[in-house]
Image 1 (cartoon, rainbow, N blue to C red):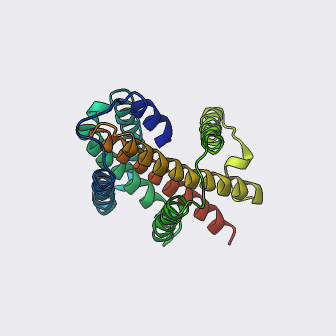
Image 2: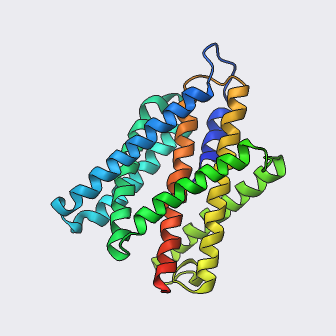
Length: 244
């Protein structure tokens, strides 16, 4: 998954120029809602179809949608003008990924998906509140710190994946030890604070009257972060359940 709105938004938005049909907050939030509905509907449909298509296809479907989602994200990142078309496709593909991984976790720990969904929206609202009320100021140092933390998490995951091919791994990235749970909790905090960066970026681009089509790019970036946060929360709740 990828991560994150900020590299994507920075790449696409910093190259934007003044537009006669500017980006607006209302337009951006409507597109965020549309993408969220696409992800949710597709995830629900995928979940309901898993018993029909067979659980043997669950893992291939999960990996296939993940790879396709990454490819679509790269298209938006390097060709932001395609976002009005590609972002909805991304929402559908990521809905398949979310549906399959949710089914997988729910089979292991019944009820975990509902708790993860609720917690994701509670955290997202909390991050919006602290940003909109000015409780958290997005300074250059704050932005640089969160971006460094995000890339550190990316490197850890890539290193973990690479080591898994040799039957090894980072002990603090797996399992339910206090250290592993602590590391996962820190990753959840980083994903949560990444939402603040997304909110700030949207606000600044609206103020700078960025081109209208970048509403889709901004919406896409926020959805990427929400999905990342949701999956990290699933992982954290699973690790906590394994200690009970």
